[in-house]
Image (cartoon, rainbow, N blue to C red; front, side, top):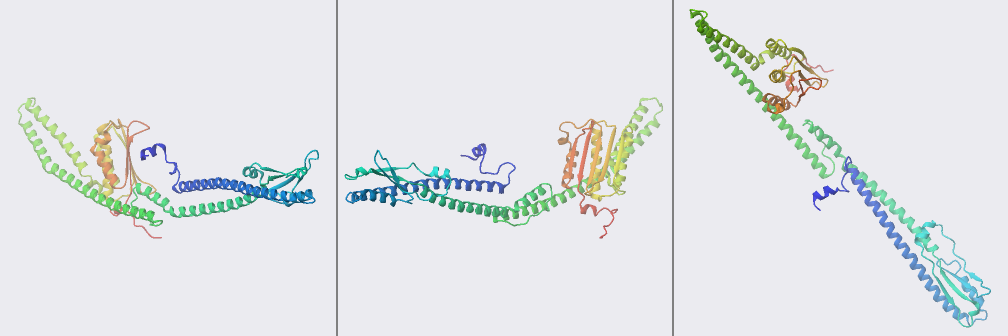
Length: 471
């Protein structure tokens, strides 16, 4: 049968759902031992029944030959009846055959031998092993016919008693053996599989992002090799995480440099030209003889467009160069960012709660970018009237960032198509954090929840952090 067929019918010997490997092994071994006991019981029964029948039949055949021979000799004796009675008494206490002298009618007396002492054994066992008694009738020869006949009947209780004693001894030995084997197997399997719980817990921690976890390389050869492979895999994942972190730091540095270059170009190249256009438009306005002429109106329109362009260029410069504000701390930078949005959107209410503890310049930059991107998306994809911004440090000293708005909510496919959200997820994931962007459940709008672990390498850049004092 193929593996697909086995999966379809189920493997009765494999671990069941929510069952440990050691429990499955012990269960299967116990089944084998129980089947062994049952098979041994069947074989013992067959052997015992055969043995009892063979022994009793043999004893009956010998007794029959002996009685027939002796009866022929008694025909010439002076007192044959006495000899016949003595012959019956010879079988007193015989464990296999009982003899009876049956006198003819009308007397019809029966003189039987005494049975052997009864064996103490369960009646059910005797009924299970014993067969139907066999009776052999030996008629007297001529000259002794007046004395009747001798009947020989099989007696099986003594032989069954021997079988019962043998059965009890074998059952005790087999039970002791099975118990000893079960105990040894339980101890052996328990010690052999002892590394598995630790290995399973280590895999859980590894799946949660803890690449520094290691397991002791102990146990049988196969499990020791598995532990060795796990440690090597964890070490490689840790190295890959460090490389990814370095690459993301380099990428962030390059992005900051590109933003700085773009901001510099806007400031040094575009702004002077806008200023020149504004001056030229003002000059044209002054040179127009008639203030109501179309030329003056066009000059005023150019000046309004230039003023609008200057406003947007200034806004772009503020978003491209947030590091200028981070020099005064994360709280001040976010408040400055919110103030710039508040200035352009006076109808929107901002609730800001930012911790005064810095997380290091690198992490502060990431947090500032997350808040900036979340607020920009709120205004870009919805019409919020209230935005809540909260940055705190929890009991495990990790940073939690929460931004909530009451805008239109997420549109289908916006989480996978927005480059800003994708970049946010990649940057936070590279730092070992988690991002959760969903529609709010209490009301319309979007909830952005970010959790980032604070690493020592980030906190080292925080000049405001107080040094730890050893107790």
